[in-house]
Amino acid sequence: AQTVTQSQPEMSVQEAETVTLSCTYDTSESDYYLFWYKQPPSRQMILVIRQEAYKQQNATENRFSVNFQKAAKSFSLKISDSQLGDAAMYFCAYRAPGGGADGLTFGKGTHLIIQP
Amino acid sequence: ETGVTQTPRHLVMGMTNKKSLKCEQHLGHNAMYWYKQSAKKPLELMFVYSLEERVENNSVPSRFSPECPNSSHLFLHLHTLQPEDSALYLCASSQFVGIYEQYFGPGTRLTVT
Image 1 (tube, rainbow over the protein chains, first blue to last red):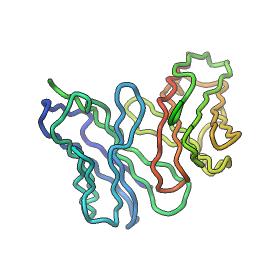
Image 2 (cartoon, rainbow over the protein chains, first blue to last red):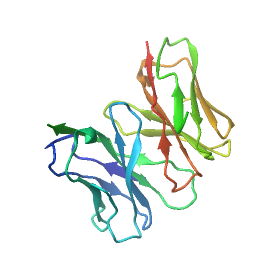
Image 3 (spheres, rainbow over the protein chains, first blue to last red):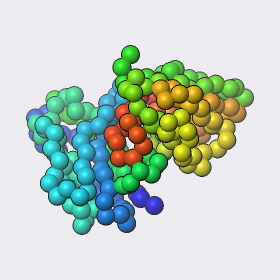
């Protein structure tokens, strides 16, 4: 079974600084999908960024980028120029390939605090 | 309304009550999901529906009963729950099952007394 591990229950960063959230996963698949979701205090989970395992290039969305290390099964999220609105729970998630009905497998989450 | 909506946002129920959670998606999606989010635990997938048919049941106790009358609506019927069932219940939808992005609702905070 796939597992996703987020080893940092909480991270704190000064506004405008850069922070990296770590995620590792375990799978025997060679092709899969990885996601970072953000859950602000209002609780609505939103997708931040997504990475296809077959792509070597790291995904980037504005201030958010990932460092995808397939051999190490590592998928960290870097947030540049942190803003107060970035404060939230961040969840790393894994999705197996194919047309199966499985949902996402989530990590326990990292609580990100932005210090003004 | 846009996206995925859930009602009620908060629910307190006794162990002998029967209640239902409602989810509605306004995105034209064909797959819908129920997740359970407990404190200090990863989100747990409960049920998956594709084109109104249940395609996955992750060993969820029978006191949770899902219903999907059409592709836009998903219900979770609750009866004789236990205090450990207290959690945030999240609904999500995607265009189809598979690798498509899932859009989440705001959740229902359930407290079982």
